[in-house]
Image (cartoon, rainbow, N blue to C red; front, side):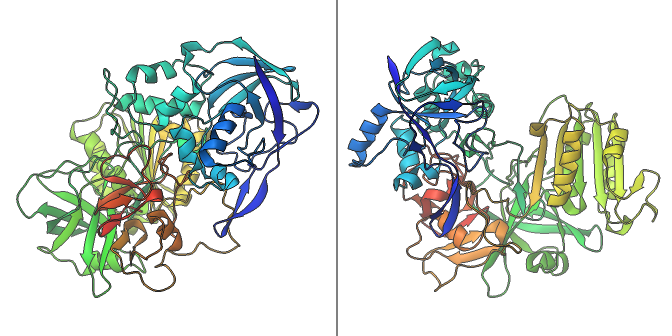
Length: 612
């Protein structure tokens, strides 16, 4: 018979960590007497990062006395007081390898349902002073689990825990946790997990994605990657994606991104076309006559250029057409300041050689039958223009809405090209907005200003459409909000962002006021190790001695980073490796997809270029 040993609560507090401040509710302590458990929390309890912890699906965290005893021996500790693992309920019994997702339990006056394993992030290691704790809890199959409150009521230490109902499929917490985080997945077990209604939405989404790329039959080999892909746009691409963090950052899984070749290869500039005064299209062909892999519409190329004595510069630009006739086309807007974009627009000549990395990126047109929305602003048209080329190549029967914002006709790149492509499609709708006003020979299809909720309704976009958005962040945020207000589901709105992705640093309190710091080389003496290039941030710097990881170097350069566990478990930090090799200083529990790297636990073995 299981027993509730301790009820632990704690309100969020600011805690110093690694030179930063973290807002966290991991500091929990036992309480005496009865305590009311409500739909979202135990009275007196709170979470610092509601995107990753807490909420209705994760109202109560459970950890077991048996695991306390295990960690005391494993870590050589005798100071592990109840609540130190951040749990609300410390229990005797209910081991992770016996409790199943969907099980229901009665404790005191309340009833609960098991919804998911604990998402182990860096804060549990921070609380215990054990930086690798997140990885250890997964590796030793001791994550603990979350409960949803079915019936509110009073609970107290000493209450008996009674099983009310077993969950369907009888998939244990430990099995469910391993299914997400460890290699060797069984396709049949993935299908079983998806048949559990109580399993939280984020974990269901992750398992759906895994099931889609895990073949039926035998389990995948132990070294097979399971959390592949990464950020990937026009300018310097960075796919923000549509996956949410409903169940914690570790449950988010980006799609697969497999490059056609490793590293860089020389390509020749076949021709240059000036689309507007500020935008040029560059056509690239291989120098050796070998066939080019067909990049998927929406992907991008990374170019490496030797400019002056500052070392090679790496920048990424979207393919603006579907590759054909052994040729790639990128389109580049001249920025100010912009050393590379300026060179490509004014100095590059036909016949010049450029080092090019294979097409990559996960912001791609998906097959399907649903209506499609391609929306862009400015040079953000490039990846969705490639999608339009693909749709028009063999006239796609899907209804299509093309929405584009330009300043005026003079700045409207690809206007005639897009219009001609749309004319090939049987159910295409074209909507152009000039932010400076309609005029200037824009024609009847041009509207002055920007899209509004009213104009969106007038377009007749159906609520079941798949939308692809690219352009400045303000445009994607605003138009994405209009689409959601119009009824489109968030997961069907895919976005591609210029430059680096927004940082994902759960719990870290932002520093003082002011604008974000531009990426730069790290402070202090220059390193003497291999060169590390952060392609989307435009920073190249030698590897410094004493640096713990590529993630730590990126942070020292003020490059926006994305991480959660910092120990090679969650794969939130997975990053495309354009060229070079790395060494894992702390072996991850599961290797990432070939051509990608976990920056939280690796260092360069050779000169490397990262898509970060």
